[in-house]
Image 1 (cartoon, protein in one colour):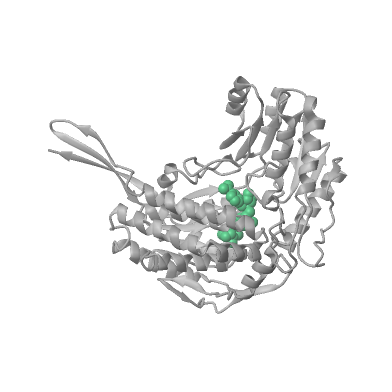
Image 2: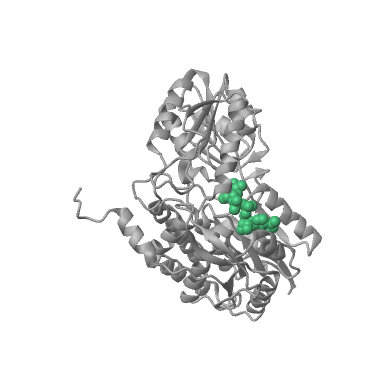
Length: 501
Ligand code: NAD
């Protein structure tokens, strides 16, 4: 390497030094101060530095955003535009986001700790593809005329629901936002986005880019703030028609309660998981172990669909575990601004402490620490929130570590004796988000994948997919579906019109 050439770290750091962080709330097409005048600190888990103040939105801000969204919906400035024109704006929005991809990736990386190069390659690619996909779909969803007799004509048309609240987490902040606003805007709704506390400033920038792309004022409002204030105010608002929520089980269930106690708005919860990667005896155990570990550690393990349990038949246990351990060695944490880093920082000190506590209890419960450490990982700076990937063996299905979502880089290995035991263990949590299955036997692939309780089953792979495939779960993982044409159903009402001729 030429010592005079700037490293990726130098380049990202230089770009970071030019960023300005603009707090506020984006309402009716303008970035304005919150009516609360209060702020909280945005602390980067990369090094503990305070990046910015974030506006702590209030219920008055939510009222203003809902009023703006309702007015925009009712006067038809967006809902009344031809679908192909709405699609064109979404495609332009995708282009504008793509043109600012490096900046957005860098902001996310500093906000929540994932490697900037990953944010660029995965997160930004995902939101750009998503906005384009729904932009292209806008004029392809025809209505139905199921009844056509000499005396009658029956029409089934799809109408936008109205005002949508989109409440999202910090782990894939732009991907999750795209999955919600893409279909909601495509269908003609007005949206109020409530970003997670940690990723508010990048969300505000996204809202400004939508305006730049030609989305009319008031159609996409962004109100950052505390979940217990802004999220709850949205959830309880009598003039919000739909809440699309991605986040934890506890908060998702709160939204169902807010709805019941307010206007009965429809709520789409997309929640956590404890996904199993099932390795049968005939599988390529090396590939299974490597990919399962990757699926458990990628994005610092902060993934709803993380393959956090490897349920493996004893015949191939050693080979699969060796491969998982090897993978853990290649994914040591590093500075999120270094393109060599496969893992970045854990989102916050609170989350780091929670993960350490769970691993500590797992060891007390009888698990064996086969890789990693319970101690904070030092990337050399002595600062920041880092944890090396952890592999736990000798995990039993009834342990807390095998039942509760860690949302961190911790893989639990559970050995089983048979296919039926593997299925029982895989299905033996309250969750039903995703599963992996490893086998070379075509019949087993079909037979077992049908029996796995999961919204998505990946056979001989993990985390694959594209915009055409819906994503979501069952049980404690909620019941909403993001992506694909099916997601449009969440934001539309069917109208039946019967015409006597
Ligand atoms: P979280 O539930 O704490 O927060 C999610 C959002 O809800 C944030 O915007 C937050 O401000 C808001 N919120 C928090 N408390 C609230 C309250 N009392 N009332 C209203 N709103 C409130 O989740 P998180 O920590 O941001 O994200 C991690 C969780 O998200 C994990 O459980 C993960 O599995 C889940 N997740 C699920 C999917 C999926 O597609 N199923 C995808 C990504 C993440």
